[in-house]
Image (cartoon, rainbow, N blue to C red):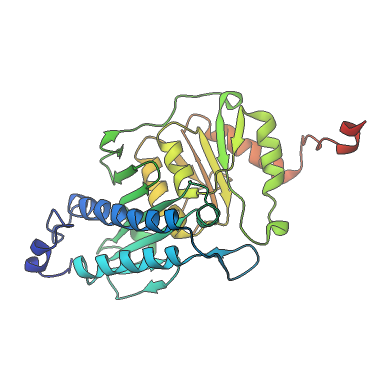
Length: 305
């Protein structure tokens, strides 16, 4: 691995361990510090209030979003100058490294812009092994998701478990779908082309309830910590899922596509669960996609009568 000089790293207080070691332990402390710093920056904007900018139909972008990603990229560049970075706002900075960061500087932008305190910073680091010089051979080695409104830092290292503010977390033990509290999300634009309302309706009737909070990264962390028993969403991006999926898997959960096939970083379908109800969810999705056994929506005209 190539990274910055050791002298530079020793002078940087964010990096508590040498980044020259091929070990997730050398990355997680620095990742956590960067996430907390970016979260503190977001909270400064959040308390000030800011002007909402529209770059598309209901697609909100704020100054805080851009400022957070700029901060994160600057910190990564100083501590790990050879690493690639893929971020939501600025795209891919490809240096040909075996290491790639996935950065969502503000997951939950719409919530943030409207003053709703459910948003986070999400970062994951992927390593492409020398014997697998392709994306197929890459694996996420560390991930952090920081919720600055609750001061909750979710962290995970590949093969070493996951933690919330330093304490180990595990998925729930719910084994019956009817007992489960689930989560989902809807796109901020082109909602008329997204079929998730049908899945929301059917799964709501077959579970204890479905929540839509507006941050996929936090939804995944809430599965990992047992607050939710499952989560699904269409058309998420790699920076939305990279950290959260690792955190779920490191707590004993399961993540796949809707048909149960393996999840990949570029998957457009994300289904996460505690593992115990995963097969039941996959079966429900198969039925919904096939149009079998669907309960009709309630008729509002009947309600008014």
